[in-house]
Length: 66
Image: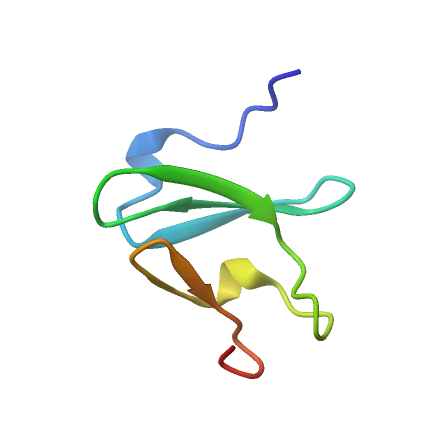
């Protein structure tokens, strides 16, 4: 099943978009132009990874920088 996230033009490289579905999903657009989708919630605490930092294809949690 496909779930529309957003238009690619609305998600610049290096940015993320959170889908408020159950469970929440983050879509990331890397600086290299790749797209990745992962569970939005950090495994350590209840934090949105879409609010974190994207470096290459790694996401850093906004709460504890892990």
